[in-house]
Image (tube, rainbow, N blue to C red; front, side, top):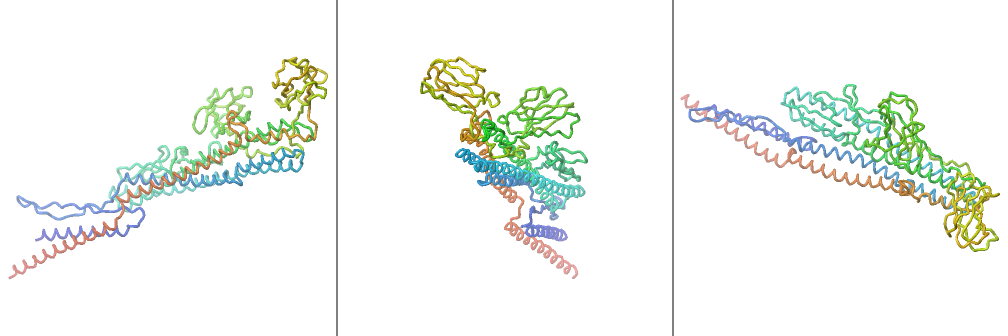
Length: 632
């Protein structure tokens, strides 16, 4: 009789625990991070009676979580990537709006300037049109500087967000370490709610930065970041710190602070908010700033080259229209030598639109791409007498460099800041060609001569009057006044180049002996528009990449590249959202609370509870009847 009562009581208690667990599942059906709990029953050892054994009832072995580690890790990874692309895409869209604006973007500002160049070409002597060109040049300068300031502001915002993310990571890491300590203290018999809390913390941490988790036998979880740096080890948490860049103190990097030892992990982070911030800054923002700088340098150099080919209203050779820039060189904070490095732009068209790291190994300099670590081919020894020459730059070092010293060369860092109009007034705009060609009035043929093309603006005899005189139909000589400089006699071919003193012309037709053609300096106040027409085509000519890429191409590419990046990021966000949603569904199918299933369990355990109560009642009734029989 007592065995029946014991069995009934054990069943009653087991059903009661099951009802409590089921009701807790129902109560937390909408609780974020809650993992469904289940009761694990175990049969109690029976009582042997000769050839057979009588059962001793049931016990609750454990209340466990319906947990799948792989699905949980997959969800955390999906959320980390989603946060990365959401952050990356938000900034990319903002940058696309800034650079691609049809009214205030890069291409619009450049186009307005060249529209005014064409206006001067239509009326080259108009002071009003010339003044407007200077104003448009100033507007272009201001717009490029404003764009750089906007991009710099985004960089500062990224710094702020990195600080915020680092603080959030540290707070979450501290809480995870605290939970680890509690789990370690109970030796594996942790409450399910404590495990749920840790999983939620890990998921939140993964949303900030991509992590790797390693579960330990004592119930704790170690958390690694970067290339394996420990963020949480058992009950101890390291700190994620923001530190100044080696070369640029205004640019923050991320490092793990393990008790005073800083390990930079900026290049090792790819997920979460932090990964999105760093990826956008390194792969999009930095490139956009360099591209705008390259546009400014290329435009200034190409426009200046052509402007120097012309003559202003006062009859003076054209000067530089825009100011030029000087590359920025920064020494690493770890340098121990006394060397100083300077860089100049020798060939703006040869610039590759990237930064360079110079390293000294104790005997020689090497040039590397700091992003990839790849060597950049360079000639020269890096001294003043033999500078390093590579990709449009000339770099030299003075002083004593020590082995391991490093310098960062940024050719375009100050390009937009230095881009300004250099001319002081409208009369200095060199719209006219500096030379004119004439046909002598007494020529005996109908031969013609082309307008002179300047080939060497620095030639000291460029503006001296020169004569091309045919001593026979097939031969000519070229000389200056007084015959002091003489070229020829040379054979004549119709339409072939005749070059002298920094200029080139072509004579076409069948000249006769004694025919004369002169090349002389244009007069001041000339209404000629030859040079300004050439200036109007500067943006369309090949300038970069060996003459295969024009300034207009670069301006369009800046907008197109950022726009394409923003579009790809938008598509990636949608893909990652879909992957995250599927990961949530997969995990919910295993760990989530199904109210229909719990309702069925409630009925099942209720019936078990009532049945156990009935067993106890029957046993009690039999026992009372037995007492009555014995008492008679």
